[in-house]
Image 1 (cartoon, one colour):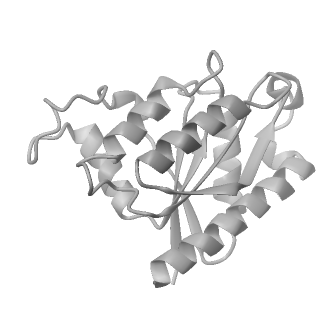
Image 2 (cartoon, rainbow, N blue to C red):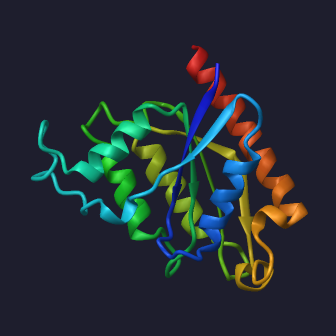
Length: 187
């Protein structure tokens, strides 16, 4: 049985290092796992209960929910914007947390990683993302972390997939998430 992991990237920039990290995750997925990089977070309207009506949920939000429901686990890639979570990532969490009590996370395992220019690699944003996802119903893997500092210089001329240390660390994160997701989907 294949385990499906949904990857959500908190940066919309085409050349985003977090997006590159997510692309590397797709390539590094172990046998029996598929990492699916979700496209379309920019099109999802800000969460508003007036829009979240059964049968008329905006198509981009419905697409996200469908992808999440079809997934066995989640891998979030969060840069750090002003010391916190990017709005687009928080918005995705908000849409996936609803309807209340029956959100798409449903106790599925979630890992949060990322890279940022600062010396700590975006840990504040990643911690805030873990907090929000946990409250929204995800089973946050607090011991599965990867924060890569100095993204602008580290990845100036090297894609994360071609950085041996990053690729090894990322492969370990995916393997651990895969293991937890496999346990959850078999239960």
